[in-house]
Length: 206
Image 1 (tube, helix red, strand yellow):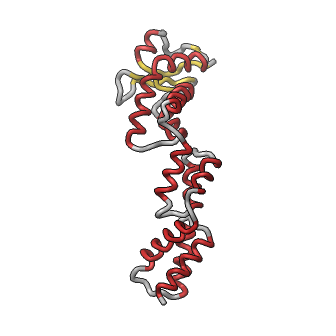
Image 2: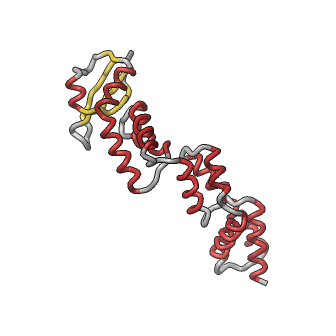
């Protein structure tokens, strides 16, 4: 059980307020729900009760916000969850929204990973892409499957184009090529791909 220690209006939405439990921000909630359930400073309430109130009153609003959020660009489940939690919704509401979005096929981490990898593979190596996918909440299994769609030849071609741009206007000597090699590694290309790309550049230079 926790005690409500503050209820403050939200600046950007006057129909909502922020609830603080035991001195810490807990969640946002519609003002009408707060009034209807007689929530006030000093009220002792369980997390389960608070979650139930917010879920019933705001699940559709949260779903609408999430759908608007993904209308700009596709998102992973983690990104949607983080977005809703930042908006002040509780985990129970985020769980509801994500479950609904799965049912509508509006969120699919596996599909997201494949499309993300396909797009980024033109400018980044598989190691960096995989790291970025994990940071977005994509599972290791989905990230690995996405990597399977990128061939070694495609990576060499991408690395070669990056090298050509990097080396433009520079003298092609040993020191420069070593810096170029490290540059490719920083872009997430593996050692073998970087070596092969350098070999292509040397052949073109000859």
